[in-house]
Amino acid sequence: MALSRCVKLNDGHLMPVLGLGTLVSEGVPKSKATEATRVAIEVGYRHIDAAYFYENEEEVGNALREKIADGTVKREELFYTTKLWATFFRPELVRPALERSLKKLRLDYVDLFIIHVPFMMKPGEELLPKDANGKIIFDTVDLRDTWAALEKCKDAGLTKSIGVSNFNHKQLEMILNKPGLKYKPVCNQVECHPYLNQSKLLEFCKSKDIVLVAYSALGSQRNSNWVDDSNPYLLEDPVLNAIAKKHNRSPAQVALRYQLQRGVVVLAKSFNEQRIKENFQVFDFELPPEDMKTIDGLNRNLRYFKLLFGVGHPCYPYSEEY
Ligand code: NAP
Image (cartoon, rainbow, N blue to C red; front, side):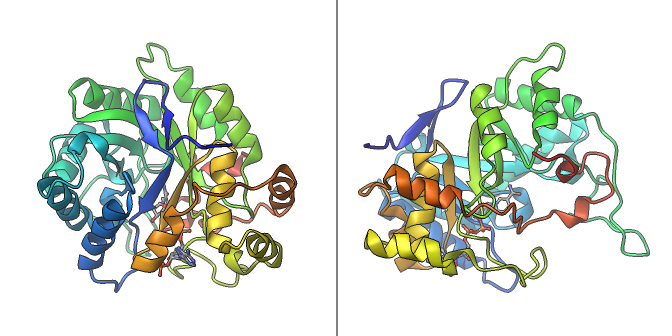
C-alpha cells in the first residue's frame, strides 16, 4: 500500500500526513527550534506544527523564511499550523491573536489555525493567568462564537484552513451543529499513540470528514510540568520493539507508520538531526494487518497530557469517554 504524502481536507486544501512538532521543554534554547525546522525542511518535511503558546514562533518562522529564501521550498509547498491560545477566545481577540503569530513569523498567512483547547482563560498577557492561590482564572465564552471569529480569519485570507484541538466528540458536534456554520473544522488535533489509540474518536472524525491529527505519537516528551513521568515509556514497549525489530525499523518509525496506515495525520517532535531524519523514513515500509492489529491491542487509554490546567472548567474535554 503506497501512502499518499498528503490528505485532502474537507475545505479542499492539502495537508502533508507527517509533520514536525515544535513544542519544547523549558530550558531548551529557542534557537534549537530554528535548527530543527531548518533540518526538517531539508529532509523533506513540509508540515510544521507550532503554536503561540510554545513561545518559539519567531524562531520557527526564521527557518521557514530562510528555506524559502534559499529556494529549498516555496511558501505554497509548506503547511504551517498555529493555534489560538485559551486567553484569546473572546471573538474580538481571535484575529488579533492570529495577527500576532503572523507578525512573529513574518508571514502573510498560515495554512491552519486551530483552537488549542476547548476551555478558556481570563484574557490578558499571561498565558496561564492565576489567582493569589495559584488557581487558573477561567473565562466563559461560547465556543461557537470563537469559531465564527475563526471563520472570519479564513475569509480574510489570514489562514487557509481552520480546525480544533483537544475537542471531544460532543464539542465537535456542537460546532458542526452551530446555526449558520460556514466552515466545518478540517481537523481535530489530539493525543494519539498505541497506548491511547482514540479508535472511537477516529471513527467519529472519519464519519464527519474531519482529519484526526495525532500529537505525542511517540509517547510525549514526558515533561514533568505537564506529564506524570511515572507513566510507562511508549518507545520501550516490548511488543512495539519486537515489531520494529522484525521490520528492521525503530519503535518510533513503527509508531508513526501505524498512524499513517489508519488514516491519521501524525506529528513527530524531534530537535535531533538524526532522529528528525529517522522519523521521515516511514514511507518505504508497510505494517501487515496482523501487526496493525497487535498494535491496536496495546491500547490502554493512557493519556500523557491530561490538560490539568483545564480541570474544573465546564468545557474540560476529558469528562467524556471520547
Ligand atoms: P512526541 O512527538 O511524542 O516526541 C516525544 C519525544 O520523542 C521527543 O522529545 C523526542 O526527543 C523523542 N524522539 C523523537 N524521535 C525519536 C526517535 N526516532 N527515537 C527516539 N526518541 C525520539 O512529542 P510531543 O512534543 O508531545 O508531540 C509532538 C508535537 O505535537 C508537539 O511538539 C506539538 O507540536 C504537538 N502537540 C500538540 C498538543 C496540543 O495540545 N494540541 C499537545 C502536545 C503536543 P528528541 O527531540 O531528543 O529527539
